[in-house]
Image (cartoon, rainbow, N blue to C red; front, side, top):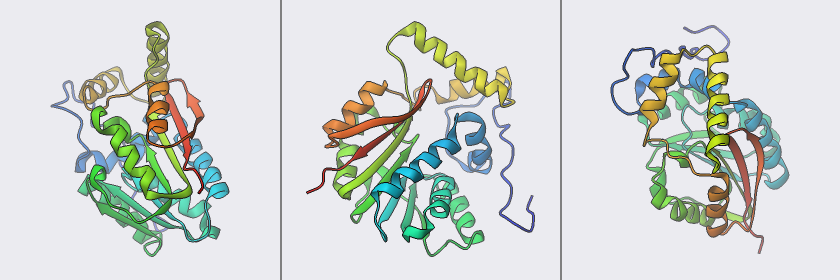
Length: 252
């Protein structure tokens, strides 16, 4: 469906309505078609985190800086950052392992006439060599990377940043206390119910993500950032078991 003022509307996320979901979660074409709706209905305060990210970048970036989004999916984050930070003349590049996601993001950039400032490429984000940039965005991406390589991955990102550069990382987390963790999970399921997801959809997606999305604690994520070189690293937002961090590379 398409109107005269924008891109094709995202389809409603109904892919987990089947009684039994076949196999593990994958970022395939079927998911890409509904992903924008999935984000809005599955990630609490998603738009607020993008708004806060824009404010952080506005304070720390300089005109002409490169901004990299690793795990850029359908390009929603970079599209909104480009709109909010247009005065800084930043250059945005999104990388994603999924060809379907990159195709959809590229289409959005073309429709909104932002193709010159927004580029999307299909790449293995754990095996990138980037030119020095002012910021790296990792929104709900690290949780899909194998835990044993996350520290080295963050060290590479630290190396990509210029002195004074910024890492923004958002993750789903677990809580050490099992009682509190269970309550946070239930609060999240209440959120999904309020967004129209059925019990079958919630159960099927949770099963599909098992051993695919592997969350750490907030403390473990901060420790990874600091071991990677980010001596300045701090959470700037939290909604129960969803949290966003900012890390600053030391200035020379």
